[in-house]
Amino acid sequence: MNHLPLIIKREYLAKVKNKSFILMTFLSPLIVVALLSLVAYLTSVNNEKVRTITVLDESGFLNETLVSTDQMIYEYLSDISLEEAKKVSIENNSYGLLHLPAFALDEVSSQIRFYSEESPSLSLISNLESKIEKRIGELKLKKLGVDLSKIKAAKTNIDMNQENFEGVKTSKTGSFLKLMFGGAAGYLLFMFIIIYGNLIMRSVIEEKTSRIIEVIISSVKPIQLMLGKIFGTSLAGITQFAIWIILIGVLSVAASFFFGVDLSATPQQEMMAGAISDASTNSELQALISEFHSLPLLNLVIAFILFFTGGYLLYSSLYAAIGAAVDNETDTQQFLMPVVMLLVVGFYVGFFTALEDPHGTISTVFSYIPFTSPIVMLIRIPFGVPIWEQALSFSILIITFMLTVWTAAKIYRVGILMYGKKPTYKELIKWLNY
Image (spheres, helix red, strand yellow):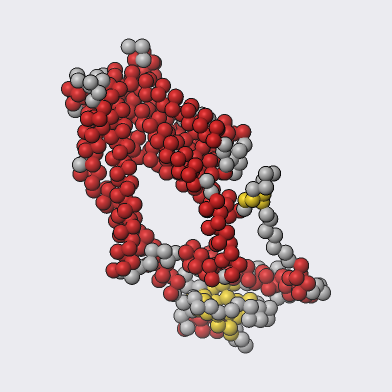
């Protein structure tokens, strides 16, 4: 009799009714939204803060180069000594004092100083250095008789059009979208395997140590029990992810409505909003939308579902076998290391090779190896992988999953009834022949 549906239902209900599972399901979105709200609030406070910098330019080189903005006000001092300028800066509660002593253009400008009560912002110092360097550079060019207007007129911005040999146009924007999708898909699979693979392993260990497994195994085949745990825990994980997405959306709207916190008020979002108002950047935004619609979305969604599911089931069977082979989590380290290393290899090949060279030899080879193909292939597919390559890679993944399940079931069958001894790799091989 096939007890697999009953086992899946039992595992699913056992997970979703667990107090810690319920707590983390509802507490995690609350923590995420609270952190985002805090970041948005701190960002808004930082943007509203106005800093005043006192400038004592004895060299005369700046010549009002530093222009005040809404968040940064520059107050120039003249005909005053450095000590008096320091006192004025302190009395006016300035953020700092920028001092340029009198020096020739050919001299090293290391005498420039910035005085402040506290350590200044690195971005502020870098910004000041950049502006001063640009100004002094222009003055040196003028001294050499160079016409700055000709230099500015000679500057050219290149926006190279990209097109394959069949005439299909691509762009940097499209490459960026593909990179985002591939990276997000690979990272999501990596984290899902780590989180819920360990959950399956702990579940097997708990039932084994409580001796409940001895009662269950008397009426259920080991392979059905293992697959039931894998599928049941997977459904619980999907349920938790779905609840997280819904709650984060609802809590984000609530936080914006009740507390007046704009969760999108980050420097990146503000830069985007400012960019949209610019005509040239607005055309880039339209190109971004056009590139998004030109992506093979159906292929991406189907491939994501297939490889995500196949990769998770493959590694879940390994986690279940490890849980059956040991009596506690401490003993799992020697067996987890090879599994985690395979995951890490897939992650690094995907993010540091496939994203840079998606059609290279290394990326192609690792997209066929079943233990790395789920991550590497998901990263490669947005860049254009033929359907036959995807089908071949997925077929190898499924065949490997079936072999892994068969192997893991043999270890599971013997391991769930073994107590009090830490198994070795040699003993695991013997279990395969029982």
